[in-house]
Length: 299
Image (cartoon, rainbow, N blue to C red; front, side, top):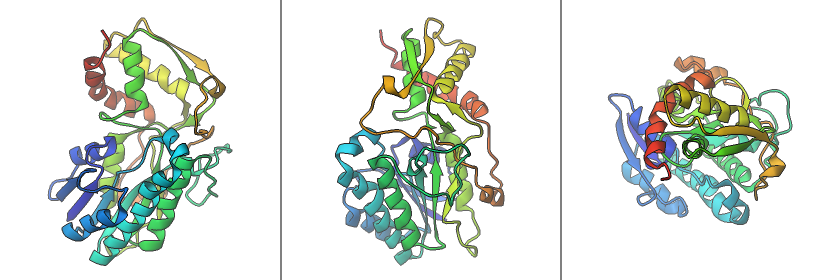
């Protein structure tokens, strides 16, 4: 199987390269080779490599910046997805993309199902929804968009890296308690995407699937768990502390949903991918992230 992976240098793209199964002919491209702000050029990359599968992990992920640059974010997260999907169709390839819990309103009490009504609160969510629509229209049966949430990996900017760096500096942290969601280890998500890539070619892809680690917590609860795991690893975070606060204490340009949990899709059973509790995933991931956090520890 020939696979074209976008987002080579991102946190999920990096994990996908590490998790790549034996026997896969993988070509990983970054922004220099595949600039999503130029959809036609991105499509040309698909035509050049002619893969069997496009694994699309690249995206505009700067949520707050999207509020002032919605057209640019939509070009990357929406129009480029359409161009890539159209090119995949033309060369006979399937495509797997990645979307977000931010397509939902955040007003709920039960984990979001794939067919629940979407109502993005911010420009980033609208841009990702545009990508979902584009993939479904361009590659019916041969395209799948995987929604996920609160992703953290050993590379790139993410919540776990930020918390570790501040804790190692002995900071007192105030972390929002009124936003609920599902933390997701990028390493496990990468394994899930590769499992999905093994979906039988004679069966249509599910157009939408949800993947997160199991369980629900607040950002505050997640931060508490990070500190406890870091203490268990013998990292120097004992002088730090974590206190709860409300979202109003940290206003941001983009409104965040207060309720983000996603229901784990039943389709993962078809590719033998089970959900892992987020606490277990964090315990697996933290040693990988701790080395980088310590290396960048403030003097």
